Length: 299
Image 1 (tube, helix red, strand yellow):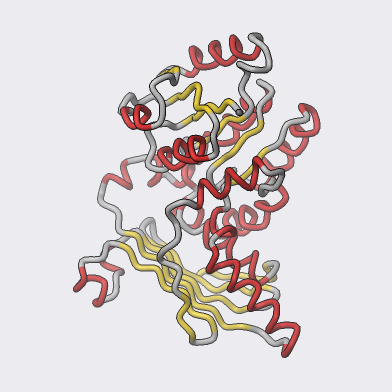
Image 2 (cartoon, rainbow, N blue to C red):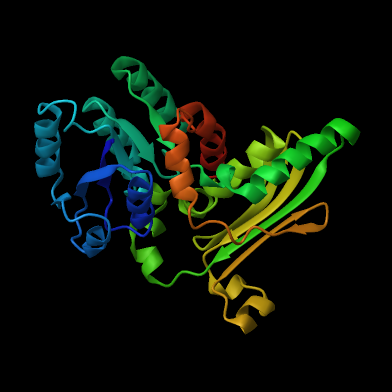
């Protein structure tokens, strides 16, 4: 059984990490968040040491580190705001734990280089939550695209539209601050950029066609595909059919005119990410770099 700590316990995505720790038969022993709305912890364990101040959390982790191998942290799960990921991963490695971090791993590609050096220095590892790479439908699509390329080669034409409605709170939070979130392309686009690069290969060119603080669009040239993409947090961008159905989110992916459906299957992907890491797999710094480089160039 491994011991986990969670940084960002009050965040939207934190319960998926709590569930993944429990589902894989491990223990969540400590949690940190400046906000104390973390009653969800009780659904997974009532023995979690919770802190709202990093300094006290740090002291507790040091205490565990000196208590022996059965008590020390093995992993730190990071679900904090994007701009804090780098510091929190560094903390994890320095206390002798591996880091499991949400996307985007960092905002700038040069931070990846520094983290690689720290991995070598400490002997610990950093893993990124690239859950779309473990989605059964997306794995199947990648295998199909690879098989088609072997048979007839050629380029694919891809259209990605992702609209996820957000209220005015979004722009008053860290998510609306480009220096803290990386903006729309990084905050909500990094998931899909990684997926597209994973399926269709490296980026050879890109240009922006639309840009505001609420939406962004452009064209990507990948090794095996030309991609037209549009990302938005503005409900006014929803198509009429979504508006009529009362759907706050619209996700559409088209390959050579064929609509690809992958709306379902997201419930347990974090658990699958944890299972993969604990089994000796996982996606590391080198895996996540291309999407970070792309998002930073778009910014």
